[in-house]
Image (cartoon, rainbow, N blue to C red; front, side, top):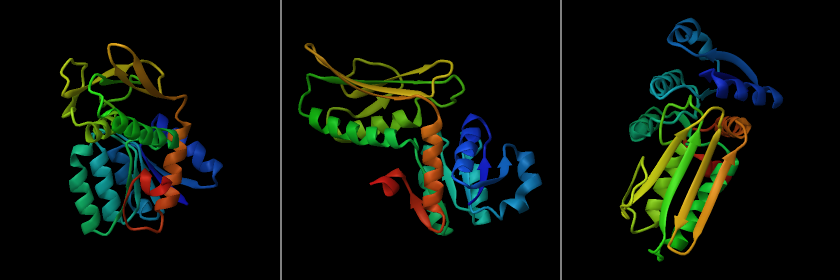
Length: 237
């Protein structure tokens, strides 16, 4: 595949390594508005774009992909409040979009475990559930997109939880999330159920960015040749 990278930070560089290992070509890197002005005509030749930029630039990048008829895999988070608008535009323009809050296969298995545990715990209101997520200091959104996905799945499966907040709380109707930013932490998510008598805890620890990069490349391979909107569950399950 001829891949255009939209965003060339730490994730973009990791994606480049995995792409080359899988014999794909990174033929274009766009990391600024000036890059778009320089390379817009070359961009039309891309088989697929992989977008890991910032919450402030992701929507403009996706719209440019739609206009150029280039399938796009979006790994940036912090924009999902605009997701329905993007989905409608993708359908209307007959374009191709693959988005995920996390491209790691392990994290997506963790999502399934989280849903099942929430279902099992739903009838045991003596347990209160909370979450902690830890990421590197360069991560701009808090809580993380992964944490929001986990939180929404808990709320969907536990009747006593009505919403989440980005702080720990004693309110039984609220799922509290503690966001921590530390140097060189790829991502750790911990979900804790605690009663007066015991604690149940599940955790996913990312050791590096390679799992995310590999998942993004797999998503790009999956998306090429397809129209429509896809998520990790469409590829994995």
